[in-house]
Image (cartoon, rainbow, N blue to C red; front, side):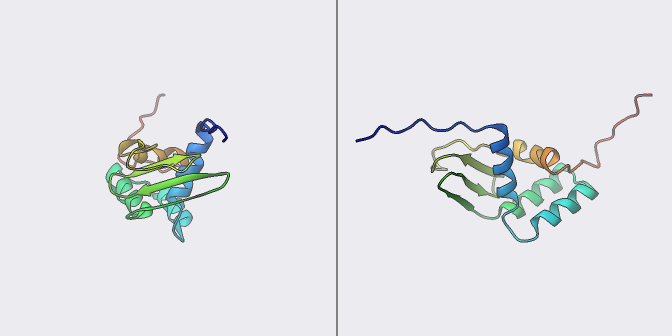
Length: 119
């Protein structure tokens, strides 16, 4: 009998990679994100875009790959290095934290956010 190894912790790079995989799981997603970054989206529009890209429920994983589970309702994404139970595990991203990620990962700006000049 062998002991179970400790779970591999998620790095920031793992979180970003998992987010990209979850939000680019449908054909044409990368082009849609490029267009959204070009035009910008309000938080409400970004939430709708994320809900569309995440879909009703999905996931993927495999040996030596991140395990992902995601769903549009609640904008939830679970990322781990082992098979997980999304009913028992806290999501890696949920709600507002999910909405913040495309602004960092894809460069989607908020057209309603006005940046005043400093000089």
